Length: 492
Image (cartoon, rainbow, N blue to C red; front, side, top):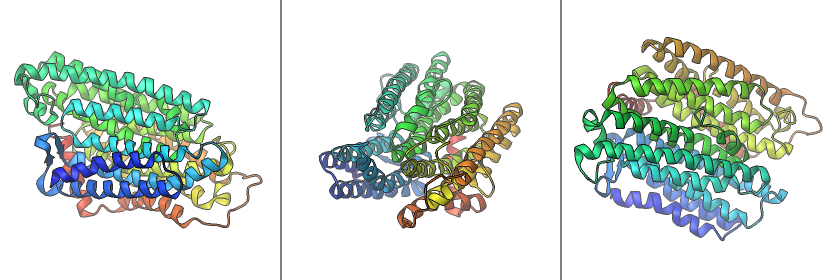
C-alpha cells in the first residue's frame, strides 16, 4: 500500500505536467488542480502514517520517511497549494500585460508541477546519492521557471541561478562521494553504504578525515542552495525575477529542502566527529549570513529582493540554531522552519499582487497599499510584522527559543550578536513596510472589488502564525517533539 501511495505521490505531478504542457486556459488550470490534489492526498496520507510507525518505508528501504521528512513533505504540499491557488490570477495578468505568451501558460503549470515533484522527492529518499539527484533536479526545473518570461533580467537571473546552483550541487556531489568512500571501508560495496540512517549507526567507525572533508563540501554545496553567505549571490536575483508563486516555493520550500540535506550531513558528522566541528562551522556561517543580509535590507529598493534578503537572514538563523543544538534551540528550529515558510510565501504572493497593481517592484513606487489594495497591502504589512517577530507572532517564540537555546549551550557571544541583528533586521523591514502600507499612493484609487479567494489565501497562513504564537495544539506539539528528537538524536 505504501508503495502505491509513493507512486501516486511522484507520478501524479510528473504525468500532470506532461498533460499540461500543450494546454492553456481553463483546461490547463483544471489539469494542474487535479494532478496536485492527487499529489496532496497521497503526500498527506503518507505523512499521516509516520507518527504511529515512527517511519514509513517502501521499495525495500529506498523510500524512508521519518518525522523530519514528513514535516518537510507536508510543508511542501501546503506552500505548493498556496502557490497553485495564486497562479491563475497571476498568470492571466502576465499574459494580458504581454509579459508572457499565451503558450507559456501550459509551460508554466507543467514546470510548476515538476518543481513540486522534485521538492517532494527530497524528504522521501534515505540514500544521500538519490538526495543529491533530487536537489539537482529542483535546480534545473526551477531555473526554467525563473526565466520563463524571457526578459533580460529574468534570463540573467536564471543563468546565474543555474550556474551557481549547479556548481554548488557539484560540491555536494563530492561530499556524497567522500561519505561513500568513508563508509565503504566499513560496509564494503553495500547497497546501503550511502543511506544516512546506516551512516548514523556506523559513524564512529568512519574515517574522520574523510568525514570532515565530506561535511565541508556539503556545507559549501548545499549551503549554496540554502543561500548561506558567501554562496548566496544567486538568491536575490532568482527570487526577485521569478513569478511570485514560484518565489513563494523557492523561499518557502526550496531553501528548506537544501537545509534538510545539510542537516542530514551534519547529523552524520556529529555522530562521527563529535559536536564541535560541524556545529562551529554552522554557527559561523549562519551568523555571517545574518550580518551580510542586514545592510542589503536597509538600502534595498526592490520589494521582492527585500524579501529575498530576509530569507538569507532567516536561513542564517536556522543554520545557527542547528549548530547550537540542545532541546530548546532545536525545538525553535523545528517550528521556525514552518512558520517562516508560510509567512514568506504569503509575503511573496502579496508582493506579486502589489507589483502587478503598481506596475513596479520598486519600493519608492509602491506606497499607500492599505488604501489602494487593502487585501494585499494589509497582508504585506501584517506579514512583515509577523516575520520580524513582533508578538504574538509565532516567529517571536521561535527566535527567542533559538537565541536562549544558544546561550544555554555556551554560544552566548553568537546568540547575543544574532539577537542584535534580528532586532536591526526587524527595524529595516518595519521602516520599509510602514512606507509601503501608509505612504502616499499617488493617483491609484481604492479597488472596490475584494477578491474573497485572495483574501482567504493571504489571511489564513498569517492567522496560523499568530495562533501558533499563542497556543500549540497537542498533535503539533507531539510532531515538533519528534522532529526535535531526530535533530538531537546524536546528542547535539
